[in-house]
Image 1 (cartoon, rainbow, N blue to C red):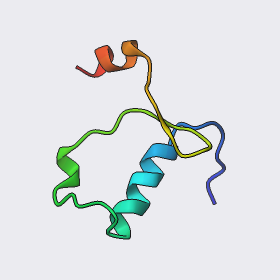
Image 2 (cartoon, rainbow, N blue to C red):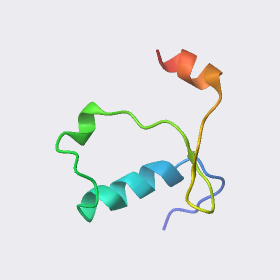
Image 3 (tube, rainbow, N blue to C red):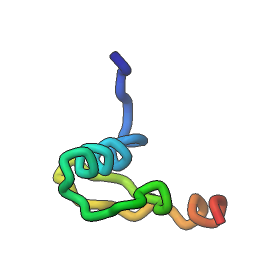
Length: 56
């Protein structure tokens, strides 16, 4: 079991579950990047611009 603290991997886990359940119509998911934070009510929250600048 992996202990979870914070919301660091919530979006990644949600995307994985949606993809596994075939609720997303994405064929080549490895070609996409998902950046953001999943809030407790399921809404996607934008991340700070410095994180995006770092990745580009």
